[in-house]
Length: 392
Image (cartoon, rainbow, N blue to C red; front, side):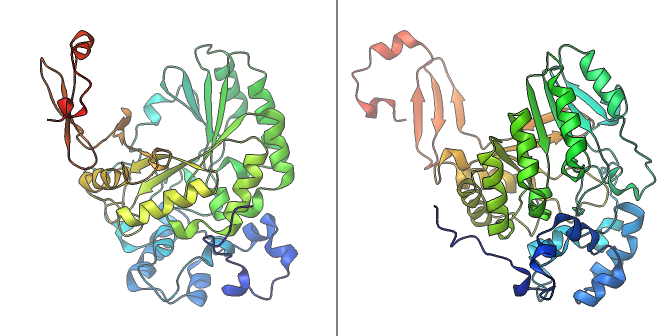
């Protein structure tokens, strides 16, 4: 068994709620019932900065406040700049909206043939099945919809969505999201997966969830059996910082992996949270140790009130350059921008191609050395096999 030394066991005894019985603490229903959802609760647990208090007063107009006890225990209550704290405690920056920011930053509404189904790419759809989450990320792309703080009045239409998917044969891939689908009961999840598996042209079923990070207690043996029954079900989780890689998360990921669930991770690049090469390298290394493949690193979407989270594009490129060649390829996510207005995911990479000439393509490696690769396969045959002949 792999050593757990790098995965802190954030038992409640090391934080708050030390008097709660073990059976309650490890019960996901208890965790949900005891979430921090009001400013008055929050102020009893932590000394808020003026910016946090102002943001918390505004939260019910944009995106609800909710933090599970488990996740709250990851916060450094003495550090106003704690990267865990920044992700879930509202700040005044959410009240500032710049002209380029949008309620629907990636254009989902314009690609929604029926309520809850986003059909942007030819062969795949996004199926939104709930508007609730265990805790609310303050940079949420769907803050217009999630928690209903803005009276979006979204009601999942399972039957209408399933009917559209069944009647559209070019769809082979369904991504189930929301809100967080793993908040659905086992019976509802089982029913939904069963219905999708019964559609002949559906080959690939994915779920996007942050439940393992906010609420690892939800990853029960019973849930894993449902995934095994309808598998393979691919799961994209959302870890942003190495401190989130606890022993509880590692064990949840192992349960999922042993049930045949392939795991990927989607991080969002956030200022003050993970915008350094060292932090991102520590994160991706821990992810691999948890059987999770780093998949995407997203540039933060242009959601309203998100300027205090967004970094320059150059920062993301710098991070990818600092990973490529300096760690295993499995650890390197694809840095993408989800194009504003509905253009889809566009990959952003450092400039490894310097020039394309009649003689070949000039490439620069992670060390800054330049190499020529011949464009004409016939020309390559006349080289004498000397490696130095390809150095530029």
